[in-house]
Length: 252
Image 1 (tube, rainbow, N blue to C red):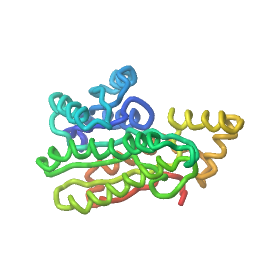
Image 2: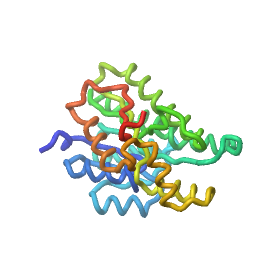
Image 3: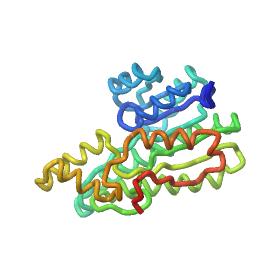
Image 4: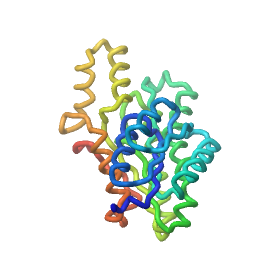
């Protein structure tokens, strides 16, 4: 039996990319896993492979999140680990960004974290143990051109992480953000195609440009991010809270 055998993990954005790998790794160590996402078909694929409970949910809607977590509790019990992974990015110059672009980016990347964590908090308080984790980004620690909304949202996640760590230090709950560089996921592939369409670069050239921000000159893997999540969710990291943990090949 592993340390996660009695834990219930809820992962937003669990139907693809990093979220799907996190679900697989938690399932492999015996945790009870619930995955949230907007696309039933993608969730079902991951559920079939991992045994996770799939629940369709828009994390930007607080009532939907509350309803989804009620369904999760009825299957797997109290929530002890909440991994806020859902995210999206809009790439365009700031001058061309609309208020709706900015608002929707903040909603998915920042409000979605707030909703999942807040709806999970009571369970963790009652259990006197919990892990609040967010997949932020290196964009939460520095600036990048043409993704100002995304940078603002991820900085908000890091700020929320640090604030909650100060609110909850004697509850048994830790709060941390993982800040990867460019991760090899479907979302990154979409970003590369966007660069190709706007610049005329080849996909290989666009990928090389993105890799250049990483001193190792490569993309981060979903497995590397997931391994960091499991470490921060475990008992050996009980003194680590309020941190933005970089997984970016040395980018500073």
